[in-house]
Image (cartoon, rainbow, N blue to C red; front, side, top):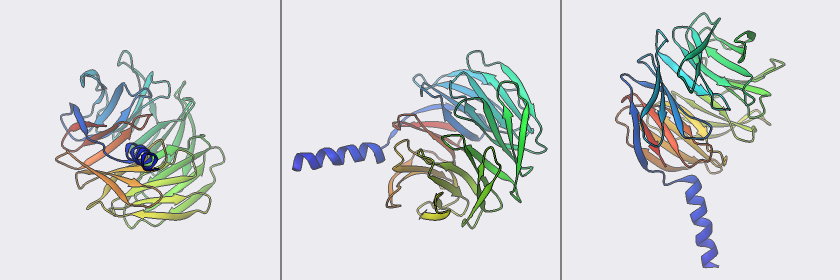
Length: 308
């Protein structure tokens, strides 16, 4: 019996905590705005206030390509599901697609009237969704670059947008203090209100039944999509929270904050299970590898750190 208990404990710990800093991957010339693993976790793409998108090799920590055609802060950069394309968006109002292998620009997507804050591919790679300070979300054809449709409903800047795992829904986070879940085809919307300051990020759980959100009110919140209610409020960060994501297991949430820390939380209990310290300034973005074994973080100290 004792042996069984010990084995169970070990498994739980591996899932939920004891991440340690592995290495520093690279450094930008200005604040890092976003970091993202490639689907196979061999590469990282980062975007920065230095107006560049940089592709890094995880193993060596070296630069593979620097993509520098944006004319303003690059807010977000993401891989396509097949890992062959990068999409980025900027305060210059444009979205750009890049070839991962050559580092060359494929095309621009233009239509937003203000800064574009976030971009994501659908899981089949055919569609891109974007959010903007112009208070709209837009869908684009990833192959042709053509604009498909627009979603309106927020009354202030939109900071983030994500597809649900099955691409049937979108979730957006806004400075109007709300999160909206949309039908990606119907445009039907359900608003979630509870944060007392700007909502910075919102993301679906791996099973698509919950949403996690982060806010300048220093909290992380979990929302139940079936009941349309707030489920839990995670308290612990000492300042505004930039980003929050579920680990692939769905049992743990990782968040990063202006308090220079990354924290891990147990979804069921809402308790903090780990605190990662290593950045010397606010931690502005994070991502988790497909197997849940590595975390990458970007910071206003201009560095990218790898944890595992």
